[in-house]
Image (cartoon, rainbow, N blue to C red; front, side, top):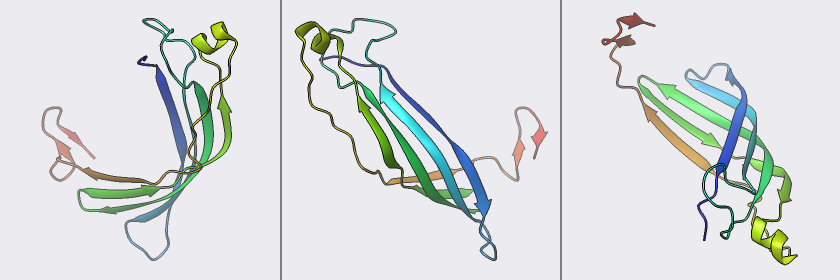
Length: 123
């Protein structure tokens, strides 16, 4: 087994939904994967390297200090790479990519009235 390096790049835009205070519609791209070789440590252990590129629609609702989000990235490009052991053995192993994900998030701000006391910054 191996503890592989993983990466995730996620970006997009959000637009307020008219006549629905606190609600925003989001659209973005998500690029995630597992590297073939580790930056630190050995690369000979089992891993499933590759990447997926997804379009990521979503919703975000903010009320007071609370924010809820729902994102559903849908993969449109997937590429399974051969790991170092696969290359050494001349094999190609299976791939495991999800067609879509359902990501639900919750965030709570602990700043009171937008004031950060340690730095005295006001929003």
